[in-house]
Image 1: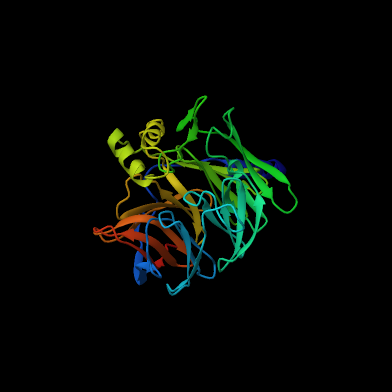
Image 2 (image 1 turned 135 degrees about the vertical axis):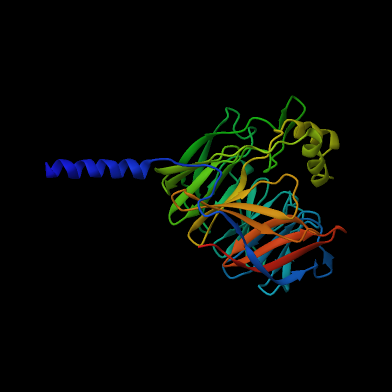
Length: 367
């Protein structure tokens, strides 16, 4: 009889560990307004006023990398906000980037990686060109595990015509590819004809595969469903959690205006509008999953950015703990970030006159 009781207990434990965590839109510990203290702001990069900061990356050493898609440069700042240099030039020569407006920047170990149309360009931490390797956008990195390995997932149906996409771990040194999971890719936002093949990805509207690594686990999901899966690094399922929340709808005008503004000069206006109309009239639930202080941060999508960033904060097993808010002055609009790194917050802000600044704050994270 005693042995039977033990077996029953073990069965119950297995069931609990593998159960899905279902959350209502009521966090267990309530709202958390992040306390922030401004350390510095930078108005320009040397003689260059900021044009449009679209991406901020911060290394573990506190070095800040900014992708300015209007100035067509990647800027490097030290932890005190001093410009260390810049890199990036349109072209096809060594260290030059064909599609510099859209070429995303990543941290790869102690190097910088830039995904171009058909290559990954590697630079040293201070922006000196090292090498390029062949790598199409169809397997563009989502994030790097180290300087040789990254996770990839396609973003548009043009890369995967059958609509079933694979998430892979790529090893650049050995050439090995390992499938982690599969998902159904979003079929909208594209035009395919005899004359035109074009796709538009707007992270706040396009359902996308989002993934993050924490404590040797992967947290991932499609951004149009508030359902996040947990697996080990081999893709073996560990658990799931979700959040019951209504989507935010947009009018056609609310959808189109920011897209047309952000894509000026990148393609013919008629093509931009045609592609944008094929996108949903609803915001995705989230555009980033991050790990800070042992907790999982899910960043809310905002198609029309203002001065607030909501962050849903979960325990590692998926229990909804806090509804967090980063609040800036009402005179500013968030244009890039926020990025949290080692109890510091990095964010690009635009004032009422259209001037953009790069800012660093101290931030207090919840326990």
